Length: 115
Length: 111
Image 1 (cartoon, rainbow over the protein chains, first blue to last red):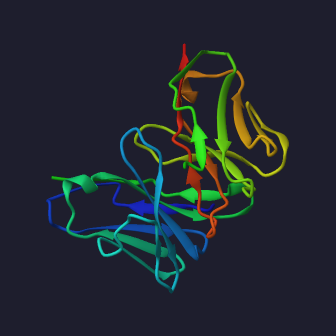
Image 2: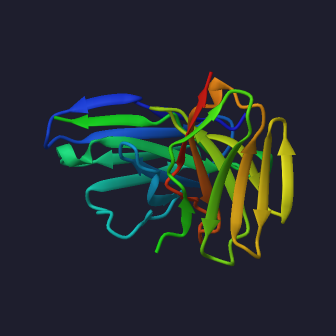
């Protein structure tokens, strides 16, 4: 139980285009979803906290107009990278708090490559 | 100032040995700590979490928390080559309960 489905797992896009990444909680309701970014050989850096029905909270240095987050339901949060550039190429991972012994569950990640 | 610090390694141990991974944190208000394992190109997998001072054991894994020293560790007994991965320590005290990760320690278990 407590699975977060994330897709696409891998996407290559042209510079200047937008890419949408979806995370769905399959068997639980996620009022809060966390979006992380991970560059090669680095740790996960929190980008934003997505709250169902309200605006996302962005971490310092993360452009909210570039990384659009929508959390319209208790089971779906999306991250849209707008006007993507090569420096946005990274591994994007979503996570939700499950609680209890499971703590937090992570999506499988999206490898974004902007060419 | 980093909130969660880890020795990035790499750390190499022979198969069957005990691997010791360490993590320190800066905020005395932190209450919950998590250890994740991450294979290359994959998302993190929870190994275990710890809230209370002392040791917590789960199979070959033992987490240790010392709040006075602001120190968390993970011991892996009888290390296997399949344990080779990056181990991430995380602090779960964010205002929205978000996780703050350390930089990770790369572990290699040599056959």
